Amino acid sequence: MKPIYFDNNATTPVANEVIEEMLPYLRDYYGNPSSMHTFGGQLHRKLEEARAKVAALINAEPEEIIFTSCGTESDNTAIMSAVESYPQKRHIITSRVEHPAVLNFCKHLSRKGFRITYLPVDKLGRLDMDVFLKAIDDDTAIVSIMYANNETGVIFPIREIGEVLRNRGILFHTDAVQAVGKIPINVKELPVDMLSLSGHKLHAPKGVGALYVRKGTRFYPYIIGGHQEFGRRAGTENVASIIGLGKACELAGQYLEVEIDYLKKLRDRLEDALLQLCPDTQVNGDRENRLPNTTNISFKFVEGEAILLRLDDYGICASSGSACTSGSLEPSHVLRAMGVPFNAIHGSIRFSLSRYNTLEEVDKVIELMPEIIRDLRMLSPYGKESLKC
Ligand code: PLP
View 1: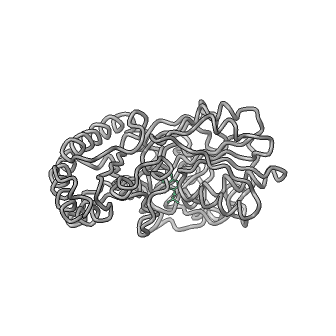
View 2: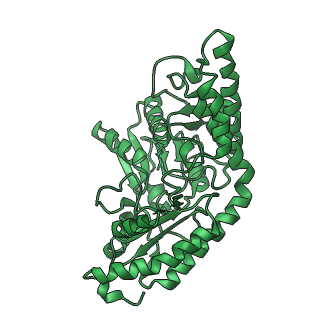
View 3: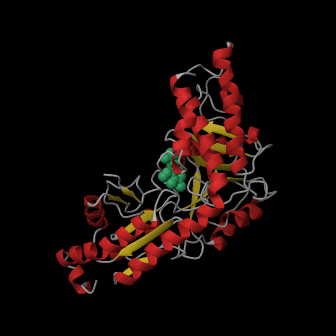
């Protein structure tokens, strides 16, 4: 049975066009792009074509793109590069709601003696700019703030932050893993020095990502070895996946405008219906300034995991909190930072859509959810208070 896949912030299906583009480079053209012979060397040109396509999606120059193995590597590289490039500086600013790719890397650096400021967010998941302004000092090496949050979809004021940092000698990195391919991004007009993206969030395969590094930015490689990626990231290139990432970025650029409207329409239909049909629900995050594909809804007095299991019985895929933290019963650090009440955090479900979802799928979820919530509340000692659904 084909699943109803509403978990596209966790990962996306690889587009058919991407698979087609990649196949010859898995099957026939298996050479090493660094080889002197034509068979391998011809792949070098394909890598550069892919680099140009990735660059075009965010309006960068091709030489500003470094291919990596994933969003996590891009994030780690950006932060590590800043602290290696400015060794006299020992302070990093980030937010409490970052992905573990940034948060846990910062924790790692704090154990090595770096000072980390974790900026708070308000109840809608918006960054506190006053705290940010006060946190900056001469010791700050880098500010790393995500473009859009993976759990709520809330979009951060990247331009404003970049403008504050401009000409202050502080690097600015944004983890745009959830934003690239979902909303327009133009680095020529955006004051960021580095930006991370990941293939599997935009219909390319898993295991490939990229880091944009603005021309002129001091850079120190994280993976050290051979001369690949102009000496900025060693390791034989994941040729087929990089070609796939290039194709996925080309498709994202082609579809972006129509897709934004389409996804908003589906997402809002789902969200409005669930809020209307199920009492004691709330949307987590700033509804005015979110990714078009994401909604995070709390169904109070029920366990998110129980909802997921019931949805799973119908082949519906969603997530509670971030996919990376599910499996543990730790409540979402993002919702906690937003001060979402305990009974609402535990029943929070993230639905994240993609261009491959349909109105019929949305209507199926709308049809099933009220009954699922009602049943689960019947079983819950707290839920009996709330049985109007
Ligand atoms: N940053 C954000 C905001 C993410 O959502 C994710 C993945 O969920 C990552 C980084 C990590 O990306 P990857 O899975 O490619 O390492």
